[in-house]
Length: 225
Image (tube, rainbow, N blue to C red; front, top):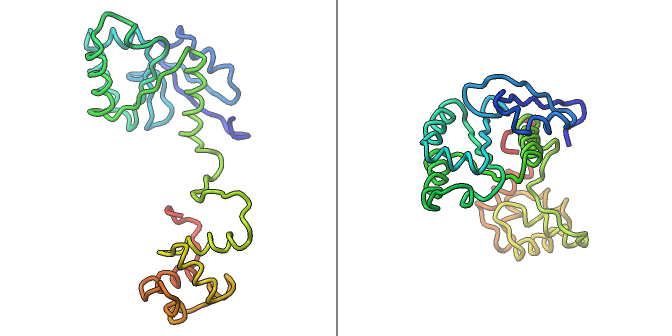
């Protein structure tokens, strides 16, 4: 789903018009297509991301005529992230090429050039994937993703323990000892270094880390938040 009021721009090479992919893209709400003659790539999702779409048969043919390797060099020179989207049948059934040659070409793209490889079923599948990748590249997820796993409705006692276990260097045993010593989370968070060091398992370094964390000001613009 595209964020409300936000559009997604995808630049499309004019030679892709007959593939069916732009036709499906044009039916998706919020997608804006700029069809033009691109020097490299079939689809450009941003200044840093380009996508090269190939049918399985074309991918195999590009190995035989060496097109694939020169093309990858140009893409890598122009874009930070290159994605090869391989559409349709199995590569190993698309032409009379030894499987090892295909594996070598795939390894060349991924290992030696850092490209990403994605397989799609058909033009409609390709269009939906391109739209999703473009949305993520241009607008992100549309919401903040928490790095903290959600647990199923724990009891208040377990919630308190989980919270304390997230403090620097604190495991389940020390978390219980801290809660037993201070009684409440407020009491724990108000404790100074000397009081923290009196709890078994909390040394000077750990006490200092805890104190620094609970007294540290929150910085909304910190990139590591």
